Length: 87
Image (cartoon, rainbow, N blue to C red; front, side, top):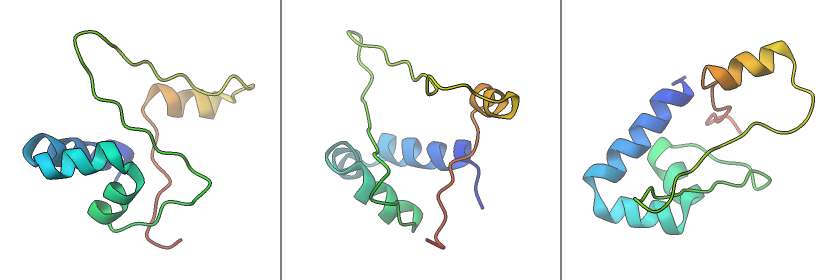
């Protein structure tokens, strides 16, 4: 299975090369990702795609709960997306 970084690179790379895919990714992130990666994303998981601009920057924070040392390492290292085609 691909790592989170590999899957993200694939999605970002395709969006950079394919304007139709980029538009679909912005309008229907789950559907575009599912189609491109051949996976099913659970209905309970929200997927948001933000387009960077000179006027906005995006910072993603981990949940405000008590994170374990393993959780902190996963966040610091990028962690893996737990998306598989076996759902």
